[in-house]
Image (cartoon, rainbow, N blue to C red):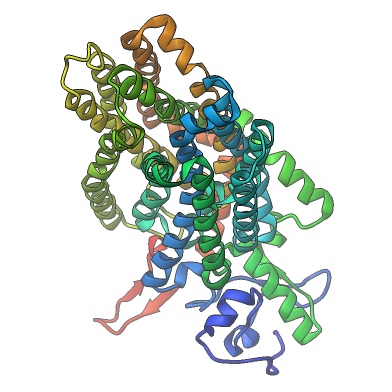
Length: 544
């Protein structure tokens, strides 16, 4: 039995400052709990979450969970804003540095290319050292390099600074998905993941609009300055308000605090089962190898990454295509061209009712299912929401492609075409991310990082050949290229829905994540005795 002498503050409710700044905080209940083991090196006490544990992120109040989710989502929004707002200042930048359109696009391409390297590192590091520290460091670096980009003396310096900003400042793009998995069980994760998944699209669409307004009054340098200011505000909010949410890190810190307080040996349950390697060799292997292994050895990750990469490539291609379509062909101003992205934004917003209906349907399915301590709905239940969107996306893209010319076609027609495009972009991405998160829960951050590698490459490369493509093929056929790519990807969600369980059963990391989650649910499962006709009422695993 664990010792029971007092240590530190012993209130059941964790004080706010301890919640934010003390990952190893313990209460009297935590100290006195009868942990499995003998407290020796060979048989240490095994530390796991207690029933109604005040520091278990899954037990946070719903308002606290959503407040944390909103903050993490806003942190992920800033890199998306930075990546797209840059395009609004291209005309001024070309004139000041006397470079070609292709060279001017290198700034945004290298910023997005940084996403391929940054999240790959940050995602794995967050699983070794926690979400909070990684997101804070990344937000500070994004602020610094964005401010430096605003003062860049030449195009070369600007490209380098933007690459560093994208690489070192993009942790939230990968880590926020891990925060969602830390806080929300499968029953409520869909709505939470919707906020995270919508960030690249909402940020990507708002970026050109905000950038166009800033460019009118301050030029391209103030666009970068505005991004630095926004990033600084988010960094301050992360420092003051974001607690650690990653369970292995929290339990590992608790075990160390208990060992220090009692003089006995404690180990977290994840560490005992090897899911949180803490040796130097284990850390390096996790950081450098795991995302690549997931990408190349897990077919589900590869297929979803390719589909999402195509979706994001289409989005970022539009940042180069819309100025061609509306400025060069129709003679619009920079501000008017920025406002043309409202069509995609409307499509993204129209997906909200679909998300609500989907969440309600999923909750009902969960409620109708008889759960034991480890039973859950299969991850494939997330995929039907992508079926309609996978068809709407190529339909909208073909509609847009064949109504942008001749200019005698009213401008509202291609703008309306972008509405199903926005809906398709978002509602393809969201179910896919939910599917990955449910399939690889404890590896969520590394999974997101692996996906971001492919997404970043496509997003960086697609805009670079957009201008030449429009010159060589003409507006209609050039705009049809992304439509054909989207059409080729339509079968992916249907195939995974049918064969996903067979694929996951043969994938090492998918099976390991499933087993780890089952173990956590069993350890957290609590039977509550209620005097209601002498019946035992259990707490569902979906509610833990």
